[in-house]
Length: 136
Image (cartoon, rainbow, N blue to C red; front, top):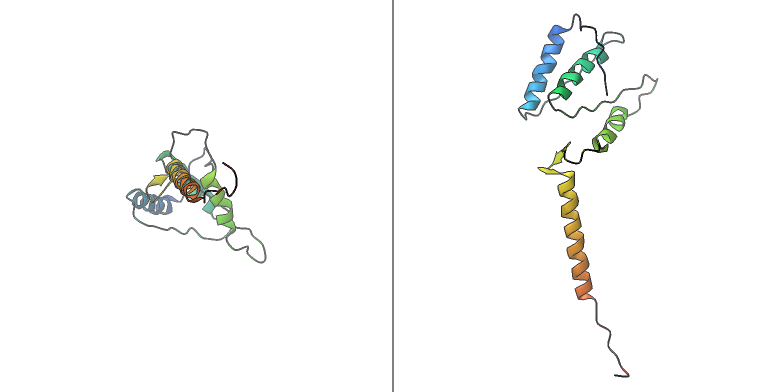
């Protein structure tokens, strides 16, 4: 995870305030997006690391990815870094890390298990019975 250094964030109170307001909007379940951009060495990573620390303390799942500084950019590289973090377990089965359509991954697993069981029972019931032509 992005770790903010122990030293105090200096000179970014305005930007940090804007980002924490975006975080407040997200906490209120408003759809929001924030873009942090600037020249190299301007403190973007530090600013976002501070925000990630606040977000994690508030109970948000924090995902991160980095862009490569190559001649040709690699499309979706930050997403390729971040998406596997969604499925990384903590070992605590009681902690729900994310929901999709209001259901946790455990609830989705139970639904799919039930669907496959019903499908197996229906398939077994529809299996044609063997007819004996000779013998008892």
